[in-house]
Structure formats: structure tokens, C-alpha cells
Amino acid sequence: MPVNNRTYFASWVLLTFVALAVYKAEDSYGAKVISVLFALSGLYIGAKLIPRGRVSPEGRAVFITGCDTGFGNLLARRLDSYGFTVLAGCYLPDGTGARNLVQETSSRLTIVPCDVTSDDSVQRAKEIIKKELKTQGKGRVVNVASISGLWSIPSNSPYCMTKYAVECFSDTLRYEMSPWGVKVAIVEPGEYGKLTNIGMNSKEVIIATANALWEDMSVDVQQDYGREYFDAQADIYNQSREECWDDVTPVIDAMLDAVTSRSPKHRYLVGELWTYFSKFKFTLLPSWMTDGVFKQLLDGFPKPAARREKYE
Image 1 (tube, rainbow, N blue to C red):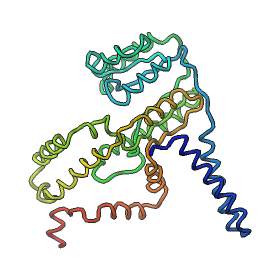
Image 2 (image 1 turned 120 degrees about the horizontal axis):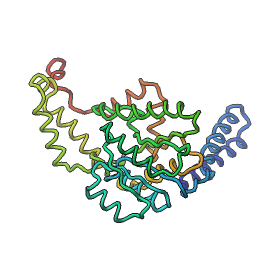
Image 3 (image 1 turned 120 degrees about the vertical axis):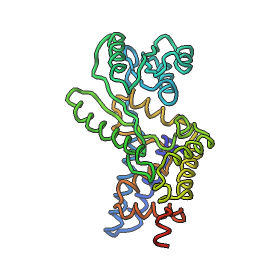
Image 4 (image 1 turned 90 degrees about the vertical axis):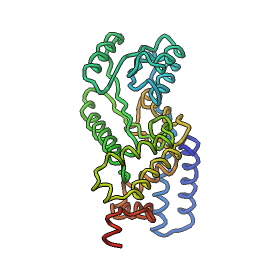
């Protein structure tokens, strides 16, 4: 179940009730401390229910990258429906995604050709945006990272590294932009991979990709790891694809809040309840405990071939 205001309200009521019950039931010092902790937790959750106000869309423009498909496309549609001027950055400005976006939104939305991997393309997009804007305001920046930017996942180092980099860059940018009055927020989706390559690839595509990777390995690496170990790793990837959540509305809601709230949060961790528990588990607990968690998760997992030959 995604965490929403109803969940926060129920949690707030429960924690407040428990705090009062513990406080009245026992007169010991320990009970008082526990009741205060529950009360503070209730206050923290209750604060999330307080409205933070919205900025008016009138005269405001939002530039979004990656609007061909996925989160960017959905956010562009949502902001357009709210009355914002939307500058939708598309890698393929003449592609199906961009054409549908123009046809199904208002005249406030403009397609901006943008390849974020090309400095020249980014500069050209910048010039288009400058011409579209009527005034230069303080503005804000919203970057999309992932829960994988908070803790590392075995065999997923390239992806985790990129998300850690987004977290680091966004934090630094928030400090640097503070004197200018520019706010910086980070959206950290959980397993909402249905709109990404993780969720969109079929099992057949994953298997074909894995086979190509295996064939590209040196003979030494193939012998060290063995095909059983390699196939088990590929199967984990396929399982993660199947477990991706279908409803991405909470992610778009978080992006919308980061853009429109008068007081946006620094971070928007979006996911089901286990996502929040995992954040506590993997970011606050000592490494020897988190290592133990992964050890349990990998219990029964095939060992690399070279290790089996040498030690077993």
C-alpha cells in the first residue's frame, strides 16, 4: 500500500493513543521516556498532514527533461492540466511520444528538443527556454534519483553509483543555491520500474541480453563465476522486473508537490511501507547488521564456480 495522507493520519492517531496509554498506565521513568518518544513520533507524522500551500501556475513555466515517455511524459501532462506553461524536453521531438503529448495537451505545452548527453543540445534547449520565459524568477530544481541512491544493491553497482551521484549533486546544489533563494528537491522512487527499461523489457529480452553479456566475457571470467552463478544473477533482475509496481501515481504526486508546494521537502521517498522501513534498516543501522541482512537474502544462492572448486 503506498504511503498517503490516510496512512499518515492512521499512524498519527495510533502513535498518539499509544503515547497517552503508556503515560497513564505506568509511573516509571522508563515508561515516561517511551511515551515521549511515541508522542514525538506522532507529532512528526502529524506535521506531514499540515497543508504547505501551493504556488499559482499563472505566469510560471516548468522545464522537464525526458518527456518522450515515462515519468517525464506523465508529469508534463499533469502540470499542463494544472495551468502551468510546460517546456517538455524530448530526445525525439518528432517521435510518437512528443506528437501525442502535443495533441493531447493545451497550447501552453511546447516541445523542446533536448539530448541531455549532448552539451550542444542542452545549450540550444537553454536558448529556447530563455525565449519562452516572460520573466526570470528564483525558480527551483527537482532531480529524480532512486532508493538505490540511498543504499547499494548487490550486482547493481553501475545503477546505484549514478543514483548516489544524483543525491550528492542535489545536496551540494541545494547548499550552493540557497543564497539565491533557489530550492532544490530530490524525488526517490521505489520499485516503480514499469515505465523504465527495468520493467518494460520482457523476460525474453532480459535472457537475450544476459546471453550476449556472457558471450562477451573472457574465458577466465566465465570459468571463475560459472554459468549457474551468472544465470542466478540474471534471474534476480527478471524477478525485480516482475515485482515493479504498476501504479506510478504516487511518484507523479511527489514530483507535483516538489514543483508546486510553497515549502517543498528536501527529499521525497516514494514507495510502499517496506520502502520506508528499508531506508531505516539500510541507512541507520551499522554495516555489520545490514551485511547480515543481505547474507540472509542470498542464503542458498549459488556460489561462484572457482570458489566451489577451491573451498568445497
